Each structure stands twice: as C-alpha cells, then as structure tokens.
Amino acid sequence: MNFQQEMKARKKMVESALDIMLPGSEVEPVSIHQAMRYAVLNGGKRLRPILVMEGARLGGKDMEKVLPLACAVELIHCFSLVHDDLPAMDDDDLRRGKPTCHKVFGEAMAILAGDALLVRAFELSANMLQDSSLPTENVLWAWNELATATGSRGMIAGQVIDLESENKSVDGDTLRVMHQKKTGALIKAALKSGAIVSGADEEQLQALEEFAGHFGLAFQITDDILDVEGDERITGKKSGSDAAGNKATYVSVFGLSRANQMAEECIEQAIRSLDIFGEEGWFLKELARSVLGRRS
Amino acid sequence: MNFQQEMKARKKMVESALDIMLPGSEVEPVSIHQAMRYAVLNGGKRLRPILVMEGARLGGKDMEKVLPLACAVELIHCFSLVHDDLPAMDDDDLRRGKPTCHKVFGEAMAILAGDALLVRAFELSANMLQDSSLPTENVLWAWNELATATGSRGMIAGQVIDLESENKSVDGDTLRVMHQKKTGALIKAALKSGAIVSGADEEQLQALEEFAGHFGLAFQITDDILDVEGDERITGKKSGSDAAGNKATYVSVFGLSRANQMAEECIEQAIRSLDIFGEEGWFLKELARSVLGRRS
Image (cartoon, rainbow over all chains, first blue to last red; front, side):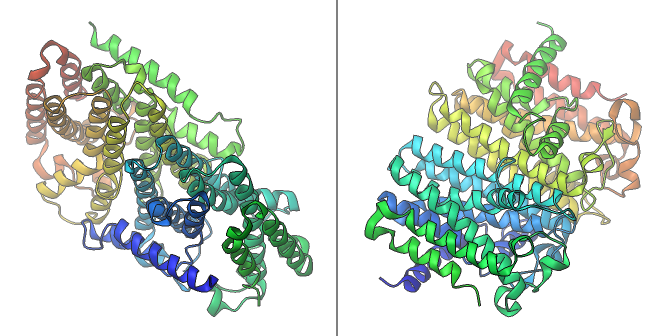
C-alpha cells in the first residue's frame, strides 16, 4: 500500500464531502456562503479529517461512515483559521498562499463566516447520530471530545494563551501548553473521535491519544522550523513572519538545532506508541515520518 | 397565577442554571471565562430560555428538564450580541447599560469569548441527549431546529442582510426578512425546541410557530419604537442610535404611528394563534401583551 496514493484517495473523499456538506455558493445570502466556501475549499491538506478516517479504520469501521464527522473537524479547523487571521487577532493577509478571508470579504463577513462554519460543524456532527449503525453513546462521546477540544479549555484556551503571551518572554512549558491546546487538542480529538465512533477499545484509544500527542507536537515544531527556513512558495506564508511578529516559537526558545532534534524525538515516540496496532499502524507511521519530511 | 411572579421565578431558575453551566471565573485561562461570564451574567431579560421552558411546559414536561437547552439558547443569543457589538460589526460601546465585552476585555478576547459561548451552547444541547426520559429523536430534532435557526440560513443570515443593507434604502419586505432571520428565527427555535423535546404534537407546534412569528415581529417593532422614544436609563442604550447609525427600522420605513399599529396587530395575531391551548395559553398571552407594555 502506497502512502501517497492513500493520502490522495482520502483527500479526494474529503474534498467531495466538504463540497456537498457546505451550502452552495448560490444559496442566499450568497456572500456568506461564498465566504464559507472560500475559507474551506482552498487546497488545505485535510490532515484532521484524514485522522478522523484513520481512527475509524483502526476501530474497524468503513471510513466513509465518518465523513460527516471528518468534515465537521475540518470546518472547526477552518473556522479557527478565519478568526485567527482577523486584524484584531494575528492580522494575517495571507494563508495557504492566498488572501485571507477578511481581505477578500471584509472583516464583518469573515467574523460571521467563521461563526457559521462552527455552527455547520456541529450540525454535521449531530447528523452522525442519525446513522443507526453507530451506537448513540459512542457518537455522543465522540461529540463531547470534539466540543471539549474546541472550546474554552481546548483550542480556544490555546488561542487565549497565545494572545496573552505576545511580547512577553515565554518559557518552554508555556509554549508547550499553548500548542497542546491551540493545535494539539483538535488533532487528538480528530483521531480519537473517529476511533470512538467506530467502537475502538480503551487500549486502542490510549495508544491513539499518545500518538496524537507526540505527533501534534512534532507538527507544531516543524511548522516553526519551516517558518524560519521554509520556501514561501511552498509554505504559503511569509517566511520569518513569526519573528517579525515577535512570537515565541520552538526555534526562538530552543534554537534551530535542538528544535529539529525535538521534532525527531517526538516522531520516534509517536511511532512507538502504535505498537499495539501491529501492521495496521503503517499509515500513521508514514504520516508521522512525512511531518519530518516537510522540512527542507 | 401572577405573570410577573412566574417570570421572576423562571428568570431565577435560568440565572442559577447559567451560573452553573458556565465555567467558573477561576478556571484557566481565567480571562476568557471572565469574558464569557461577563457576556452572559449581565442582567439579561432571559426571554429566550423562558420561551424554551414554556414550550416544554405546554408540551407536558417539567420545565427543569429543559434547563440545559434553555441555557444553550441564551448562550447562542449572548454569543451573537458579543460579535454584533464588535468594531467591525455594529461597533457598540454599550449594551444593557454596561460597556460591551470588547470594551472591557479587548477585541480579540471578545471574538474568542463569543466563539467559546457558541461551543458551550452546543455542548449543553448535546447534554440533553443524556437524559433518557427524553426520546433521542426529539432531542435531535430540537437540536437541528436550533442549529438551523442559528446558522448561515438563520440568525447569521439575518446579520448578513443587516450588514449588506447599511446605508442603502431598505423596503418593508427586506426589513421584515432581515428581522425574521436575525431575531425571529432564534425566538421561534427557542419556543419550538422546548416543545419538541417534550413531545408536543404537530398541531401544538404549528400554533407555537405561528405565535413566535408574530411575537418576534412585535418584539422587533417595539425595539425600534423604543430606540426613538425610549428612556436610555431603562433601555440601556443610547436613544436615537439607530438613526445616528443610518439604520433602516420599522419607524424609519413606516413612521412611528404605523409602527405602533403594526406592533399591536402582531400581538393580536399572536394571541389568537394560541387558541388551541385554551387556558394554558395564559402565559404566552401575558408575555405578548408585556411586549407592547415596554413602550412608553
């Protein structure tokens, strides 16, 4: 099984599903639906929905069954990016190589589009409850994981810590907690919710939680490394934007060499946590290695 | 049964529930939880949660059973106010007689607090599913009503229409549709969701839907009248702020006299739609009359 082919196939499934599950751009009011679609159908890597699908597969169900949940997670991710980019927040003009939502549609529309994406995400998660082949208590459990990971003690908490750390000297612990919540929580919830919904057992969930923790951290460290080193044409954002914004990063706190080392250590730990899956762990192992491969 | 006493008792139940169902102000990160509590525990009238409870009562269940749902609806309402007040949106410094959330906590925190309130609202609605005395399909149905009423074809659509109508001449139809979505949809969903969850039948739901439509409209018309005529110390916002902001209102489109007449006609229609409830319709009838009573 070829990892690249598998990624491509899953990404295709997600793109089709997202296209269907978002209101069409002709639906009134047209502007907000265009803004929502712009914020989502933009060439994203779809890491999180792919993790939802993998969680489902490892738990023993068809990946297609969890597409509404996978799309919900991606909508939550996209909502957070739209709001994060706003002038009052990170004030970014560019994302994934294109103008940010508020640059195209205006700030007010971007605020509302983000809000609407969040509502739609919860609608889609609830739709999972209509699938009678999935036990209600599992879907509810997965739903709760997702809501907790998104809210004021999860992703939003991470954004608050990030906000409050601006222009302050930040130590390694604060940085870690901030990223754990800001990006790690949703990544973890993605993988776990897919598995929970599919009836994965406690041992499997524990392993996936561990994997996601190390993986999420490596993902963030390599993001920081790419910001310093990366080619703007590939990363889609201005290099050095973290430094320009005076943001604490793994590179600024630990140095480039140690940051690289930490990323590699995380990936090793991530891979080790997949032992109980045996051969079936192949996809997540490849995914973990590909995170390191993003570095130049 | 005394309407004022009943309102007071219900409001008290809602206040206690909101206090419990929001994260405490000591929960980390402290700032966002303070902002969320500030945005909610602020002396609001709690109209929408009271409607949820009334819907439940008319459907034959204890009002206490629907408190999570009632609180969810209020959190959705409060989220929309926080975002609506933002500089990029209506840019309001004052709400309910106090500084708006972003004036106290900053714009970024207010954006995030609104987001977190929305997430918490959906968590609370989902919690209803854990009550085994309420049929799952009813709770799901109620949930869907709420999500639809909140999203890009409901309340958020209304905000978009409002945004796009700024500084344009707006006719009566556009005004009506804008308000139907911006404020009417959530009011309707509040009353209906309480009733749906309690197993109200189709005839009852139809009557409640009709009531809510007329009631919501009357509510908005009297809001517009109060803006022109009202005492700032009572309404909590600057008089004439609509006119200053060049906003189309029922008064600016129809004139004060006709607007008053329309509000009265709406309330008459609202009261008539409650016929099938007989004596039990007393509360909603009093509530409808109290809307007219807000006028000086």
